[in-house]
Length: 131
Image (cartoon, rainbow, N blue to C red; front, side, top):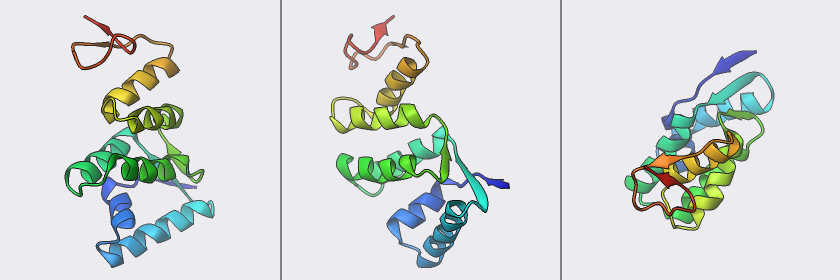
């Protein structure tokens, strides 16, 4: 089976449907993956870029972003790098207390049975041991 890594723009065109021809092509790619004709591998960076662009460039609310990302991350026909950590991170991010990257790192540390260190004073000690 052919393995494909979709760029962030593939997801954005599909979500936004701002360029209908590209949105249609993205949809066709997703349909191929759903039918098992291709494997779509989604690296972490793509998930982070989607969140960033929807937030900073398109002004989506945190709740809207969480909804879009949960749909992508929970899609069984996509192979999402660190899926379990992302699912937990989205629940944490949705609370509005911390940023998406911090939420992911905290949950990834839990998944990996690791300790997170940060100089970020905004993270509470319940999450991180500051150094």
